[in-house]
Image 1 (cartoon, rainbow, N blue to C red):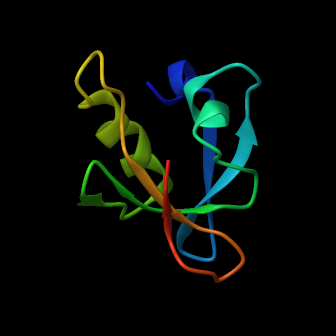
Image 2 (cartoon, one colour):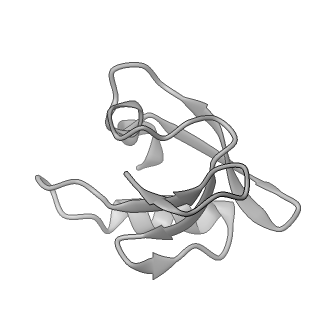
Length: 79
């Protein structure tokens, strides 16, 4: 569930854009910021904003999820 990670994502211009990051949640701790574009979750490509939620739901309990994002067109980062 993306809300457990503190992440809200919306579809904008055919990409999944982070629209909110909750304080003191895993997404914030991982450095994800509003405006980041989600590219992959745990190595799987993000195909829509809805796919982010589906992929996060598949993440194993414990180690969390690896989310690859791109910020302002710069090199992708993993959080």
